[in-house]
Structure formats: structure tokens, C-alpha cells
Image (cartoon, rainbow, N blue to C red; front, top):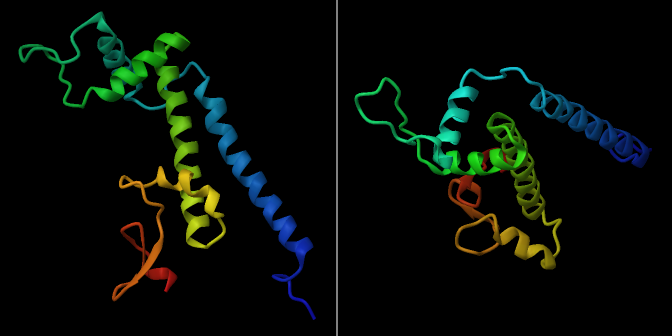
Length: 157
């Protein structure tokens, strides 16, 4: 007798249900990114400094002004450059945020597949991007349990 966990049709349906949930969950942020309304109260602030980074005004104002910026400049330059391409720094920040979510999800998926032994050896160059030292992440045992890329996964033991 087969259980539901062994039935390939059941597993296929569950897999497609997860795909539908993922697409449905990602559709709203994609749709909302193109709306001309304020989503977060700091979007205007970020757009202001992204414009400043593109040379319209000083990125770090003087101490006697009533506005401050204590953030590193890289994000403002990246959002400002993309903002020049799309014409709106707020939309540029939203698009970069969506791209970051997809990149993080892909990195998590790749790292989990490697931990489970699903990836082939020719996928290793992709996995090297996940670590600074250029080696593919591999799980290892220690006295604390199973570790993966320096993060403790005690619940996997």
C-alpha cells in the first residue's frame, strides 16, 4: 500500500500548488511596484538622496542644514543610475528591490540543493558565487550539529 507521500500524482499536485502560491505571492509586489503611490514612508527620502548622488545636490549636506544622511553612498549611486534609465528613482528602487528578492531566493535555493546533494559537479561555478573564498559551500559536522557555510542548522540534526 502506498501512502500519500509516495504517490507521484499527489506530490506533483503539491508541487504545482506551491508554484501557484509563489507566483501569486510575488504578483502583488510586482504589480504594486508600478503604482504611483507611496508604499513606504522612506521612499521619497531615498529618491531624494539618489538624485543627490547623481550630481543634482550634495549627497552629504553640511552640518548647519536641517537634513542629514548617515548612510553609505553605494545604494544611492546604484538607485540613481537605474533611476536615470527608467526615469524615476522611486521606481528604480522598487525594481532593484524585486531583483534582490529573486537573487536571494535563487541563492537560497541553490544552497539548499547543494546541501541535499541534488546539484551536479558542473553547477559548482554557480555555487562559488555564494561564498567569498571561491569554494563551493558544503555541509560539515561539528560538536554543535550540522553546519552549512558558517551558519548553524541545529534543527536538521
